[in-house]
Amino acid sequence: MENTEMLEQLNKFTRRQLSADEVFIFPVTLCDNEIDRDNERFSRKSLDELAEKFIGVTGIFDHDPKGGNQTARIFMTEVIEEDRENSIGERYAYLKGYAYMVRTSSNADLIREIDGGIKKEVSVSCTADRQVCSVCGTDRRVKACHHVKGRRYDGKKCFVSLEDISDAYEWSFVAVPAQVCAGVTKKFEEDIPETEDIPESVENTEAANEISREELETNIRRALALRCPDGCAKQVFERVREKLEDGELEELGKILSVGKAPKTPVCLDEYTMKI
Ligand SMILES: [Zn+2]
Image (cartoon, rainbow, N blue to C red; front, side, top):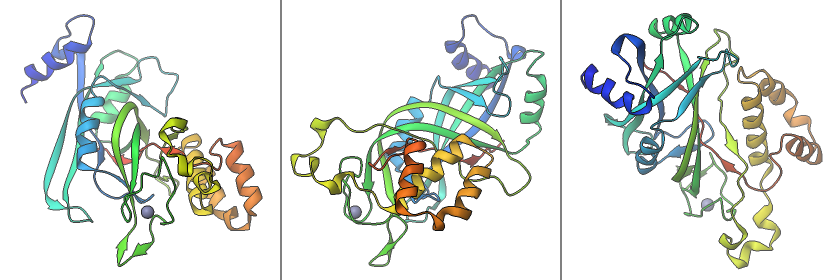
């Protein structure tokens, strides 16, 4: 796309018409349809839904949350298909966003960093209304199934497909530290489905509210990664995890508000920005 067309697009989001000199435009890779380390993935259709919902959404730069001008906004998105397959034999696709920042004296350094291709991770937060088990097709937001993510059934790895994206509310940049600490940053929100959405048969059964220790650990990992994006808290958790009794783990879950009931993981994954 020509720069002038891009400018036209982004000026739809500005109070006054900005000129090419006033803005800094850059691409970000937001997410893809590959199974991630939490054994979850966006379907191709979800990527299309995200493409629509991310337009106009503001991104933040974690390393300087106080900076008034340290935000960028996505004004255009496209889903790009590559000529290769993802790990489950579907055509690999990713969501690319185009973001802009209005150039000011205070964000000149940040712009130089992005322009210079300093490696960043991008996290996205969104809500997936359905989270479908790849083995049995159960929507795990509504009811639990006995399949364990990452485990193999009939030779196929179980994963959860994130479907029906109802909201995309944030994306953020995290500078990647050179050391090991860069853990997966996945965000999720507490969003228990309305009671009427839960089929009567499971509403009152304990199984509906039970999650496995493994899932609770995953939720805790995410919550810690969210609170400590450099991954340090998560590393500490990994060291003590096995020593924790079930009750202690549940207590930690409560403190981090990840409880015991199935939550809505929101699909935040880190992707290296391609500039
Ligand atoms: Zn299942």
